[in-house]
Image (cartoon, rainbow, N blue to C red; front, side, top):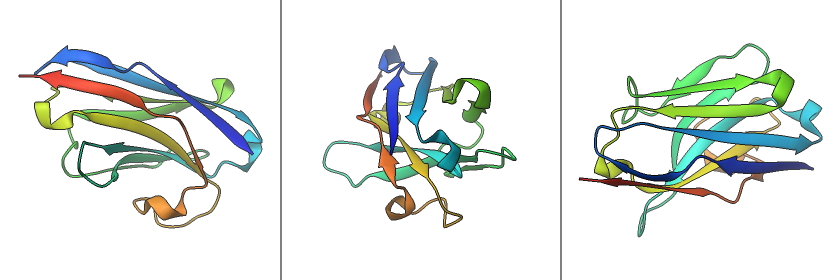
Length: 124
C-alpha cells in the first residue's frame, strides 16, 4: 500500500500561482510514476500531469502546458505541482495518484493509489 497526502490548495485570483505537494508513504519502492488529476463540479476527473519516479520524464495535458510544472523529490518521497498563470477554469479538486506499472500515463484507471484531494479555487 502507498498512502498519499496532498497539501497546498486554496483560493487565488486569476493570474496567480499555487504550489501543490503530495507526500507518499508506505511501499514507496513500488512507485513507477506519479500524477496529478483534477475534477471540477459536474465534470469527469481529468489528467493534468505525470512524472516518472526514476528518470523524471514529464507529461502534461494541453490545457496546462507552459503554465504548470510537475516535479519530484525522491529523497522526500514528495511530488509537486507548480501552477502559474491560473485561470478560473483551473478551479477543481486536485488529486495526486501513484502508478506502479508502465502503463498509459493519462488514463486514470492505470493509477493504483489516490490521495484525498485538495481544493483549488481561482477567482476571476
